[in-house]
Amino acid sequence: MNHMLRTALLMTVMTVLVVVIGGSIAGQGGATLGVIIAIVMNLLSYWNSDTLVLAMTGARPFGAGDNPAIPQLVADLAQRAQIPTPKVYIVESAEPNAFATGRDPEHGVVAVTTGIMRTLNHDELAGVIAHELAHIKNRDTLVSAISASMAGVITQFAYLLRWGTLLGGNRQRGGTSMLSSLALMIVAPIAATLIQMGISRTREFAADEGAAQITGKPLALAQALTKIDTQAHATQATTIAANPATASLFIINPFSGGLASWFSTHPPTADRVARLHELAKQQP
Image 1 (cartoon, rainbow, N blue to C red):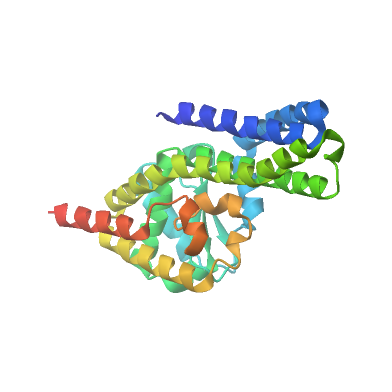
Image 2: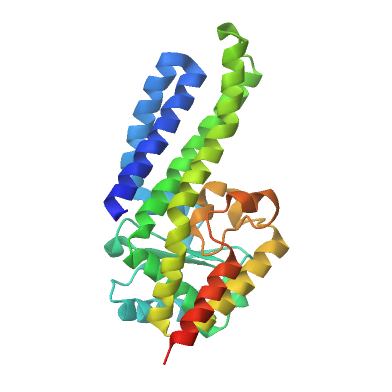
């Protein structure tokens, strides 16, 4: 499925979810409002998806007091990947992770956490950044950013629906309507996550392979993924995962282990590491 088709499909499905939830909250008027909100969000997501994602994750631009080696590493790897040098952002979080966003390579953004800079060595960090650059080069970032921002809207609508139901907003329409609203309240965020899963899982393998081609060191990325995954299990995603809508953007899903792993937007880390080891064996 090509880039534009995936983007159109994502926008359509997410729009339907917003409209259905709006109708459950306030009937026909709510559905109409949902249409308006969905249209506005789709337009905002397309043109300002990077801004929305950066705000949702609390990222900020690299400043004078931050490690200057990181922007230089990004610039060097972007030159190898033959894409414009993206903007570089930092997320204040002890959890080691990174993500990319932007609607196209000309508007690309790479963000790293303070934790990943402390956890990984140079080659491992280069592998992670190259993975994010591969996402930008493959134009995965627009779809991921739209899914993150739209999933955030759907989750907030579900919260409104929950409170409306608990406060008796649907009682006048009968018990069946209340049950339907309760079901939708639960299903809608899950459906949004499943959409993210279906779109992002295959792209992670492709980005890993792209990173290996950019750096020529697939084992360094494999080591980085193992370290990040281990730390994600240890911290239980206390900071950057505060907004689950952005989980699909990160190189390792911040929600690791337990029930959350059933709905992971990423393939198992062990499978990704195994593929990288196979790529290393194929190198001359």
